[in-house]
Image (tube, rainbow, N blue to C red; front, top):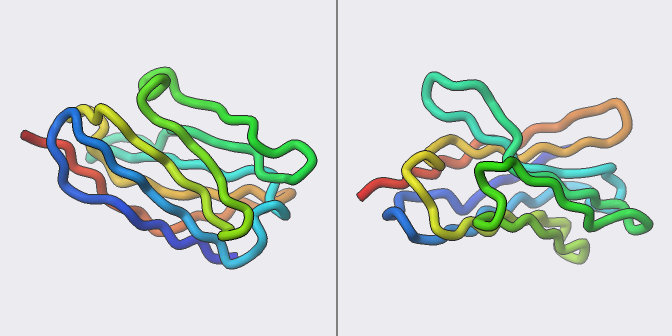
Length: 118
């Protein structure tokens, strides 16, 4: 399973970005997918996750720090999970990683860098 993340960039505080994570398999075969981030010198932390199975899909979970600003969504037809990030803050600066969970297996995509700076 391969996960291809994209959409990072350099933005100003208050701007928006949308990250995309496209899987090499049907995402509804996954249990869930999510976005994690790791700031320089920090640990990798959960940003948001969403269940992706057809029967239970669509349940989202967010870190407190991004609630109300970030939205995770999925498009089964494109095998893609999105992270819409609004009202970005300098504290959101980090490498963002896509993660897939399928049974006992965890899959990671490469990081995409988000830098929020004036």
